[in-house]
Image (cartoon, rainbow, N blue to C red; front, side, top):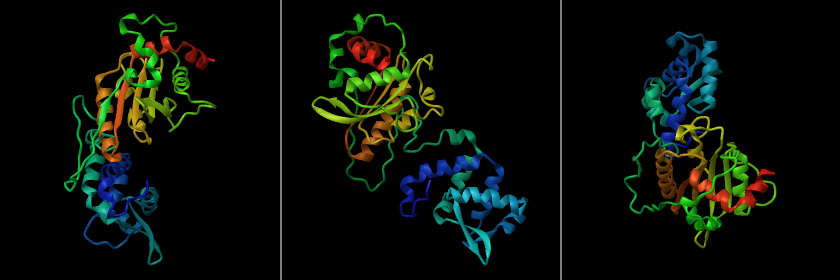
Length: 306
């Protein structure tokens, strides 16, 4: 993660602070080296020997730690009077206390909020805006599959008349490819973004307009009620959906989906709308709607299974 210029740092400070705190949280020695380099008012570079003498580590150990941290841009590595030295960045130095507080307290770090990772509780949506903002665009709308023109066939199948399905749950990749076929994706379909459960498509239509969409899928490998913590190895699959250049964000699961998933989608959709200054749409495709899709688009899902 390259360091932002001083003038740009405030906009991304929560993400930078979170990133730096997680790097330091892995080792008390890392914390000691970082704090010593940033300690004091002087901006003069400090050598490994000087740092080592103050924190009780060997110069070799300081070089190892500082090399890793400087590569992540916590401070600058340079040659000073012919020796490897380290110099603090003014912008990082200004928030060093916040970084250290989070690094030393795992519970605070876990609850630290950023724009991309708001970790919203149910019913809680926070939107932080600069004081100078006078004209804010916000449009985030909850939708269902009935609102998506590509899935128009499901509108004739009422929830009370959903037939039994065999198998009860499709493999994740089959459901994902089935949706891709319904939407009109042709050729070889490839996963995107490093998460095998995600689909990116530009074929979704809401009303007469066409939008780019990011869809997260969870298959039979997940059991019970789907919560944000079950989305991805680090519980961040939903957040990663919003890293894409899309306006529609959906989560599909052949089971019950917790309200907390919807609330997280809502919070991120609001932030996305503000950042991009355009409408965002969000929603879930739980068990009943998944069955409605399978019932009305049997041929597409059968093709996906092959």
